[in-house]
Length: 310
Image 1 (cartoon, rainbow, N blue to C red):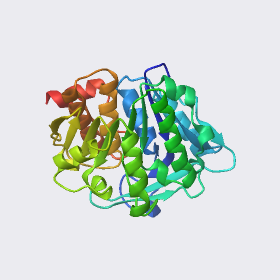
Image 2 (cartoon, rainbow, N blue to C red):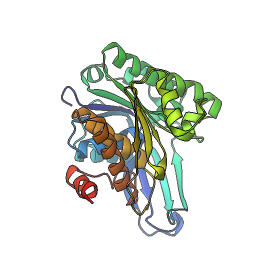
Image 3 (cartoon, rainbow, N blue to C red):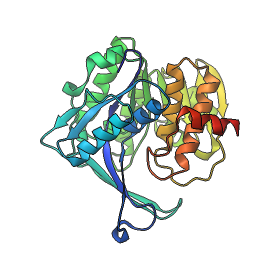
């Protein structure tokens, strides 16, 4: 990755799923990758941003799959660690329709849960334009949480902006355990994305605009509160913004939040004004919703133009 690009740090998983029906009845499955930070890296790369992903994979075929897909997308994976004592995490997906879908995660003792401070690519962080993490990474294990904080400290010491998508998964940890750690990470970050439900998990109350202001009050310069199909609200450098969503037929919500983040950060790194960053983020989310899978629907710049013109 050249200096000034986007570095994402966290988890990647191999993803296998049906396009319809239960997995037990499938004669074939779709093959891809998942993991919030990895999907954000792919999304930003498709938008022309110099991008890298760092983390751990196992010395196995799912790990090789993840690295191959990342590199095919133009994502620099040179700082990835290969763990020969743990497997790459998996997610298996059943897909019935937009209302009935199930994802089963197999990440217990996976390579991603074994992230440790020695895995932090300090030189890459110091030369990055933005370091991005999600709230899912510290939920993987105590060592992953410690590593997330350490990576943020490296970036802050180097004057590199930190982006955090404050995601929460009940499958990883309890709300009370998550709230304190995610609050502290958010307070240390420059750019924060969060769903309105997660902002409330952190202890804030009010309407979406009030939630954005409250979250900005603990430290971040840029806050975006995601509202799903209702769009988003933001407070960027003290100014409020309202972000409508693009009306599309929703097929699969997996990866939609990551697409939103990728669009925003890609435009941030190309010095786009706030309104354009938010508009690009909303358009990327719309594209992601339109097809199954975490990363398949991520758009390039030409595709974005067709949606925004429409």
